[in-house]
Picture (cartoon, rainbow, N blue to C red):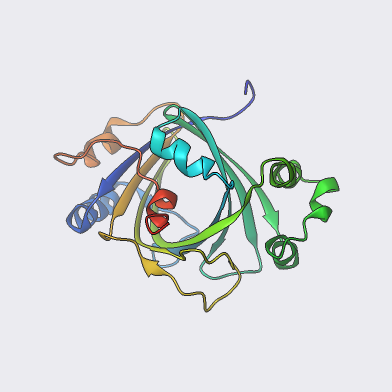
Length: 226
C-alpha cells in the first residue's frame, strides 16, 4: 500500500439535463481526452464476481476497502483488451492494468486459465489466484458511452458516462452481436478524479444544485435484474 498511487475520486448521479449543462461547461474550460473519437468513446466491460456476490455486496454495504476485477475494451476493438483491478479505499482509488490479446481473452472466457499461473504479468497471476481460491468468475457485461475531459493542473480527469446497458448474465465480451438492455431509469454519471488538488476553476463548473457525491456504481446498476 505504501507505494500504491491513490487518486481522489468523486461520483455524482446526474440526469440528462445536468449532462447537457456540464458538457457545455467542460468544453469551455477543459480539454477533450485525446484518445476520444469525436469527443467520446464506447466502453464495454466484463465484471468478475464471486459465487457469493462479494463485490456487489461490499459496494451496496459501503465497505471502505474493496476491489473488483474487470476486462475492458473500447469502441468494439477486440485487438487490445485491458484487464483491470480497481481498488477503492475510502474516497481514494487506484487502478492496475495489464493488456491481454484476443487469444488470451478467449481462453480466459472459456475457462482455460492454467496459462495464467506462470504469466509474467503480476495482475494476470493475481486474477488466476483469486479465480482458483475465491471462485472469481465473469459475471456480466456492461456497455456505456463516455465523454472524457482532462485538465493539467492537479491531474484532473472528468468523465460523463451515460447510455448504460447491461448484458444481464451474458459474459462473452468478444461477441460483437451481444445483446444488452438499458438499465432502469436511464441514469448518467459524472466522475471526477484528481491527484493532489482539485483546482477551484474545475470545482466551480461542476457545481449543480442538489447534487452530492455518492457511491453510484455502473456494475451495481447492471445487476438490478439479478
